Amino acid sequence: MRLELVSRLGSLAAGARNLGELFRALHEETERVMDATVFLFALYDEASETVQVVRQMDRGVEHSGGSFPLGKGFTSEVIRTGAPRLVRRWSAEGPPVRLLYGTEAGDLVTPQSGVVVPILSGDRVLGVLSAQSYRPEAYEEADLLSLSAIAAQAGITIQRLRVTEQMAVEHERHASELEAVLATMNDALLIVDARGAIVRLNRAARELLCLDSASLVFGQPLEQQRLERWPVTAREIAAALVPVIDALRSGASHAGMEIELGSGQLRVLSLGASVLRSPKGVPQGGVIVFRDITGQRELERLREDIFAMAWHDMKTPITVIRGHAELLLRRLSCGERDPKVLESDAALIVEHTDHLSKLLTTLFDISSLEAGLLSISPRPTDLGALTRDVTRGMRATARRNIEVLAHQGVVGRWDEQRIRQVLTNLLSNALKYSPEGSTVTVSLTADERSVTVRVSDEGIGLDDIELAQLFRRGYRAEPARKLAGAGLGLYFCNGIVTAHGGRMWAESFGHGRGSTFCFTLPLREEHGADRPVEDRA
Image (cartoon, rainbow, N blue to C red; front, side):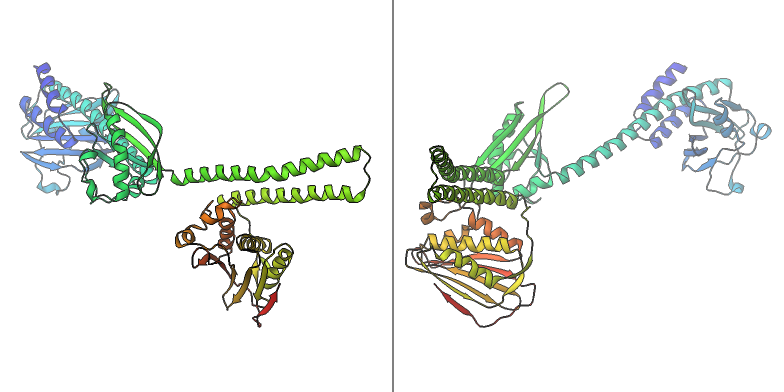
């Protein structure tokens, strides 16, 4: 009989998803074997020494529970001792019982008999079950044994529910952690199921694909999506992902792939894909992680170009330095003592060493600019005086006329050495790309807030497409490619001007009609704005 009871209760309790459902299963089974007019199911909290009534039944009406501290009643006694208790006559053996903790004592009818048993897990008391009757002597020892068997099954189910609850809490915590990781990932992430349908994507994926919730339909294989509603960029990336998803469905992972998107402007995606498998090893979809590395690839190509061009440019001074050093050694070993001859060789070595040093400095400055570490040391600088100093040093070898129009005393807080680099580069370009005998004009104008420098030439000129790209890394306009150079000067100059809080641009009416390169710098100190001074070569 008791084995049948345990088996039947085990089936009922196994289906309980929470303590409320467990209470009803326990009450139903207790009613089968004894009087359960009043039935109580409570749990015990050891930390607070509090009894928490889960549910209680009184004459067919289910009531929610309350809580009470351990006291002197039979329920508290059973919890303290861990031993069951049979009460044949409650009025004779113990104090009145208060069942419905939210009502007044006067409204209660006291049960006359009952059985109270502990719910155990090993030696630990988890709670109690109590069946009570309004009849005296309604219970026998057999009822005590039956309710103890029911309590044993209740203990197993309570442990299962607690483990399930703990697992649910852990699952929720892990899910929250995963959400936080996905939200902060810089890489785009897609999760697809066994059919190739998108079931998850993170913020970075939405941004890279330029998608919102209206554009994306979850639960459909990617090739069946309404891709015509997707932005062009998203359609292009989706088309590239389809074969990767197909491979995942067949169980093939990918690591370190790069995909070039050829339509429109070239873009490069770095992609990795891993298969998700069932416990039996069956492919169940996969995870795709990808990022746009176009900028990284452009930078790598630029660095390769820079070093290739730098090596080409360095070969000449290195060859000259070595050649004249060997020549100087031979002359000294042969007893040459003519100072003019020795000075000539030494001067060439110094000249090309300086050229090599400047080239290495430029490479270092470009690297610093790329890394955001370009140093700027502002101090009071007279831009007019600096401009005249730069042009004065270039006139001797210019073979072009240089005209300077500048205000007296245009002073601001700038890095004099860096602005000298900008002026030297712009003036060198103007002279390099202008025909002999033409005029290069450098002008300065200032107002209360900024100063503008304009370097104009009568040279090869630029079209609109070239003007739009002039200040990109490594860019050289088509006519300029016939002359030596790495295409870094304007990029570097723009970086210097920007670091000062200024702006750089270029103007031209087209090929063969000359160009004007301009930049502004903010004025951070008072300056005089006297009449322009014309300085002609």
